Image (tube, rainbow over all chains, first blue to last red; front, side):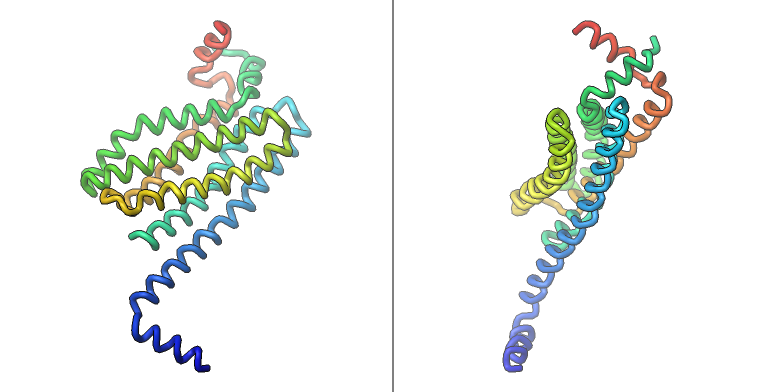
Length: 91
Length: 155
């Protein structure tokens, strides 16, 4: 209870510093959470591409082409999280 | 000359990532002057520099992804899986370091940099996907297939 009161005093004394800290925490959390989805997505894309290549080795070139594009599109989600991180931290 | 399906299959199965990324970089370099000029008109010199840096980061990201996958594809599917996931994390770390390293420069503007990263990444991919989907659906319609075939014959 005393700790909470002390924390409330710090927040009241230095609201700007607390805001900067919270922004940094939010940016880090946002970036990390935004990377989870693409990680799962890339795993699915590559896993299914490998299954397809194992079933039809003669179409490996086409599968790898679409796999590469799929990975790049999935990665765009992580890049959006990255841009939010940049904007929160440096804007 | 329209290339035969067999030739195209051979062409496509020989490291297609390299062909795709070469196309992406070519198109990125084509749009770069226009995009940088546009950013310069909106945000000034600093905005143009940030947009150029963002575009360079996106193209470097594509090149790294293709290099990882091409290298891993030569070894085995298991390494391909590891390279795809490991490469994703590695490239995010490199991007973060590349941006954090320049954050204190006077010409660093986060807004044009961020917009450039998202728009150029998605725009170039969409552009490339239209081309690839056409060539996958109708292999004889690959625009420069005959040139590539001639190049391979000379080798």
